[in-house]
Length: 139
Image 1 (spheres, helix red, strand yellow):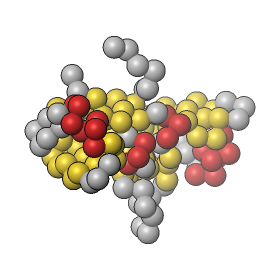
Image 2 (tube, helix red, strand yellow):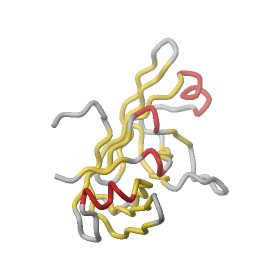
Image 3 (spheres, one colour):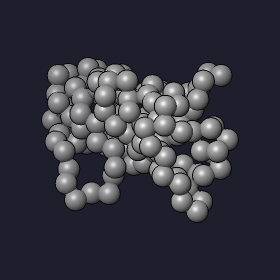
């Protein structure tokens, strides 16, 4: 299956915490960083997720926010350190490619936000991703 989701990071499930309807799944990305996904319990069961399961974490580029440093006191579970490797500024929007350990992310943010953050190729950034915006796929 081919997907339009640009951000597809390989990893391995390290923990599954089931709730009544939803579960949180911790994934160690191939670069060593940890990512949390909040998915339905039904999806956990259908995918057969357990520690050791190989997965790909999928995130739409519009769901990746950027910061110039780690943020404390925020509910966003996933903060991945990386470096801007490509920056394309359009009239209203910007596409920012960020290399993180073990892969690459694309963030679609406003041109104004890119300017306010002072982004340039080589900038150190933190990619922020809500756990509810992370989908998981198995091979």
